[in-house]
Image (cartoon, rainbow, N blue to C red):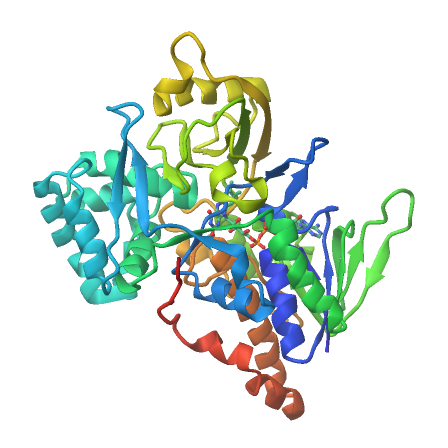
Length: 488
Ligand SMILES: Cc1cc2nc3c(=O)[nH]c(=O)nc-3n(C[C@H](O)[C@H](O)[C@H](O)COP(=O)(O)OP(=O)(O)OC[C@H]3O[C@@H](n4cnc5c(N)ncnc54)[C@H](O)[C@@H]3O)c2cc1C
């Protein structure tokens, strides 16, 4: 079957990959001249990469890790020490670590929390452990029910002090969703905590060894095109054309550089574009349908990614760092963490600025200036005194609408991959899957879409149904994620 997919982010590419595995022919149409959507990256005139986002991979990403394996590129993930590292705002320049010992979950995480006395008092640890019990005992059902509360409200209800929210979970909340604990749905943080508590290597972090566009997206494209599929850049979906019965007749592509518009037809159609442009593009008759009306409950959240090149080394830490700063979220010295960006004598900090709603319309200069002021607290030794570190150059990448804003009550608006329109499907990390707005969520959503297309054929076409059922890659779709044996 021929399947046209709009959007070459990780969801669209993963969908195409798993459709190929099931014997179909995907054609991916990407609006921009770069692959990857929110993982897209570019090279500047000096040959230095800059990215839409600082991306960390977790051991608790079974579908992503399986994809790396299937593509034969597992060696591109650079696994770091099993630890989570936080800045201590009240002690500038110092760090606090949650070192996770190599023992079975959840004892490894419990041990890491018990051994860290910088960030939580014993009373807070005990209160938090008790507060977490319903999530551990009742599992995902309880976690989903808690979507009605912000994480700050949930902590209050569980009798855990406000300080825990500001001290520890501001970092986790901003890292996972780019918003603060008083805004984020508790389902998000409880889901992540549950995964970390259940999987021995779930909280272990890896960095890709180069740019996601080249080192992750391109191998997926090669896999697709070598097997008869197609991926087209500069191919923006302009309109979804309908048949009289409301099913899709074709995708109309906007002609660029004076070229005429082009209609692309197929047996099935997938939107793997983010939710905000999709809402704008919905055909009028679909706007009357409750399924599509629900999309109004979702919108992308702003975030900013900064790259700062310095004249010297600021740190030798080869890991993700949680800044716990009001301005910044996570950051890393990419000259240490990423093979292709490596530099033994100069640091390149990649930093996520979040929440970004008050910053997104400011100039790059203002954003860099505010970040530099923050760095004086993170690296006081290098920015105070007679010979402060010099900023050589910077790149600021603003994304006004990134992953869906995970405020309380959003779960009910996240659509399944199958829609009421027989030949139209959705993919994207905003669609309903258990891994939230993440790379893992995007890859899983693409897989689920491929599965939904194959399922929809099962009734009509026994031959295709058989080939799908026999596909080893697709068989894993309905299984819960297995524990990962990610190694350093
Ligand atoms: C700053 C930042 C940091 C992040 N850090 C992490 C992290 O550490 N770990 C993690 O797991 N996740 C992280 N994420 C989230 C992760 O990047 C996303 O969840 C994931 O990449 C989303 O993939 P997607 O395919 O669902 O959507 P997108 O990547 O948004 O893809 C949608 C695609 O559709 C295209 N498109 C839009 N309109 C059209 C059109 N009309 N026609 C054709 N194509 C169109 C877009 O150009 C884009 O390529 C981060 C995101 C950001 C922004």
